[in-house]
Length: 81
Image (tube, rainbow, N blue to C red; front, side):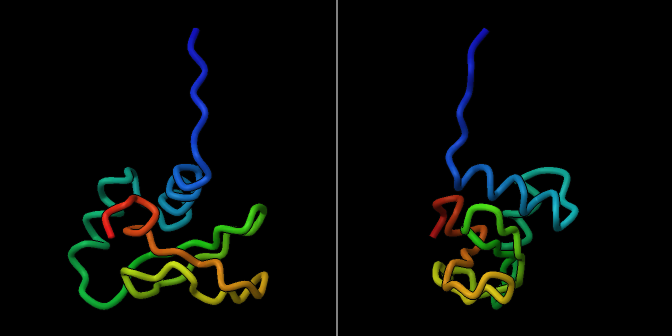
């Protein structure tokens, strides 16, 4: 049996899909790509899963839960921006 290890980015993308109610990553990314101004985003701090809607190219958004500039958009996490 093979063991797969997901990167922190992949884990956060999966968590973002779950928290936002998307059935698949494709659905989340399609929504993010179709909207011009806002994109689902998640805090990258370990143990913090704060989500918000931010600019599609955001990679240092303010996290209201932990106080860091650690919120990253789904499009950046997926490597599309």
